[in-house]
Length: 316
Image (cartoon, rainbow, N blue to C red; front, top):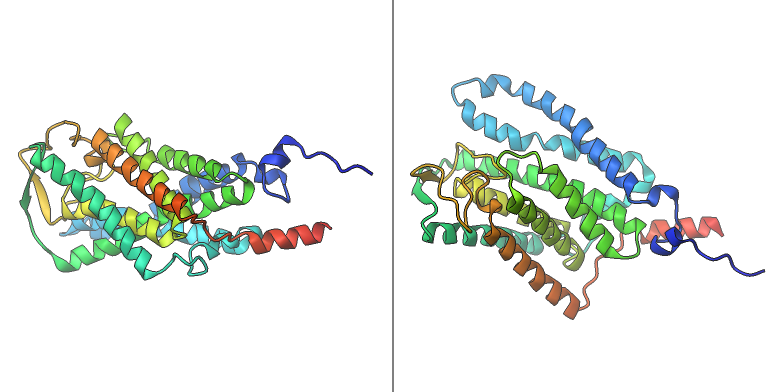
């Protein structure tokens, strides 16, 4: 009896193919978990911090809570992946099961993310777009914000380079699908940010592609999370510049002479991220990682391999 021909969907999806492998379903799930479930929990958590926010050091607690509230995303996604067996391989991608999840790669991520942002900041400063002055060095608050920004950055990475990217990698044979769709989703999450412009959206998309490359070529969710952390922390807490439109009241340096001058290197409303310079720098780093990964034939750990084998065996 002749073998049945595969449908178009079966040819582009990894086998065994299920209807819920089509890209719209993990995207809808991610949107619901991020915007609605996590969003409601974040509002409830922020309400618990209201006594501190309304207190004498309220400005610090306000910015701290904005970052720390992303712990709700961690709770929701980890619970979701643990409860639903078919999602449990995503949890492997967060652990040393993937060889790139180690302290060395975490440190590399810090260097790449912090280095890119510092370079862009220096260009804006040298070009005269921003004027910075030393403000203070409150070590305890800086450490608290480091942890909070790690939770926030890691939470966004968990949504896009953890859950959504891995679900799309399970579904599609071509990794480019996972690259483009998780980056587009990441960009869409930031479209409502204060002061966002076209270069800001392009910069966010480029950073998402860069972080995805780290997961793919470095086999390291930790590296992507660290790069995201370092970019945000350098921009918002060290340099005192807007991070996706939000300015921290606690930072080592502060802007002087207003909000800065608009140019190729700085946007007064969206900061470094809202510029063509930011886009170019991140694209160049993307090209460098792609060249290195392709030349050395680097591939990520397939966290779905065991589950797929079990499903294929059960289908025989």
